[in-house]
Length: 188
Image (cartoon, rainbow, N blue to C red; front, top):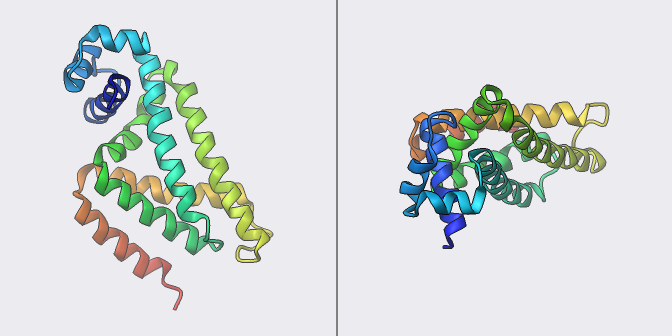
C-alpha cells in the first residue's frame, strides 16, 4: 500500500475514534507509520486530508452499494440490498462505519469541512434517487412517490445502522439486520 493510502486509512481510523477536532496530524502520521512531513506533503492541511478521507470512504461505499442495488427495483429490495452490503462493509472495515457516523457531526462543527462532506452526501443521495427512479420505471415503486424522499428514507435507515455499528460488534449488527429484515421487510 502506498504512503498516501496509508495516511488516508489512518486518518479514517483517527477521525472515527477521536473526531476531526481532537485528531492531530502527528497522531495520524504515527498510526500510518510515517512522518508528519509525509502527511503535509500529500495533503497540505488537515482539511484536505478530511476531504481525501471522505472521497475514499464514500467512494468505496458508493461503488459497492450501487453494484448491490443494480438488480433491485422495489423499496424493500433496495433497502435489503443496501443494508446487506453495509453489513459486509462493516465486517471488513468497521472503521468505515465509525467515520460515516462521525463525519456529519464533524462537518457541522467545523464549517471548513461542510463542502467536502456535502459533496459526498449529494453523490450518495443522487445514486439512491436514481435507483428509486429505476424502480419506478420498472413499476416496482409507485410513480407518485417522490424519489428523493424515498431515497432519503433509505439513507436514514442505513445511517441509523451506521451509528449503531459504532458501538456494536459486527455479529451483533448482523443480528440486528436480520431482525429488522424479518420484522419490517418480510413481505410474505
